[in-house]
Amino acid sequence: GAGVSQTPSNKVTEKGKYVELRCDPISGHTALYWYRQSLGQGPEFLIYFQGTGAADDSGLPNDRFFAVRPEGSVSTLKIQRTERGDSAVYLCASSPRLDNEQFFGPGTRLTVL
Amino acid sequence: SQQGEEDPQALSIQEGENATMNCSYKTSINNLQWYRQNSGRGLVHLILIRSNEREKHSGRLRVTLDTSKKSSSLLITASRAADTASYFCATATKTSYDKVIFGPGTSLSVIP
View 1 (cartoon, rainbow over the protein chains, first blue to last red):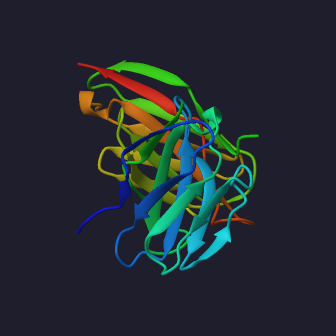
View 2 (view 1 turned 90 degrees about the vertical axis):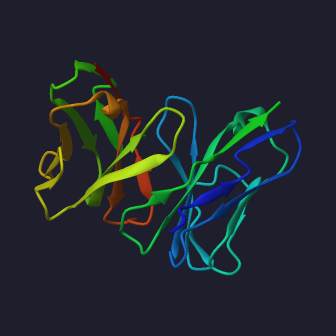
């Protein structure tokens, strides 16, 4: 079956612009995670969804970041008023349930000029 | 502060040798996972070990967990050039086990 997919694979934007990053999890996976990874570092937890609800958004760095998963499948990470420090690879992962291995997508590389 | 940290930061070995990476963490865990990331590619799950387990195997991989020392190790036996990658440990704590925290990783180079 298909794995986790993320679109776009690359996004270049200007400082101050709004961006949306999309994640399509593996069908049937109820748990969905967003991470951010900078060069040479491990993934940094942003937010976790169980079904449609954000069960833990404690990793979102500030209120410019927001994520939704309205139907319990596809999720969108939204970043307002982008800053150069937001440049990173944004990773999405899904899991059949909490407390299980996670299946990662290829990531979206965001570059803020 | 980091929940988990891998050691060493970088490791270079000859093909055929064994590679050992360690992970130390601070807070009591529900489970600990190891992931591999090849250059420019996504993360791949290797092994999940729960807090009540001490050792798990998967092919050439062996993971141990010592909860009294708050540490885990990943052993790769008979390494191959294709094992060249970054390896991360990730922990889910007992109080917040939905929030999986990754360490900074160990960069492994296997020289043919």
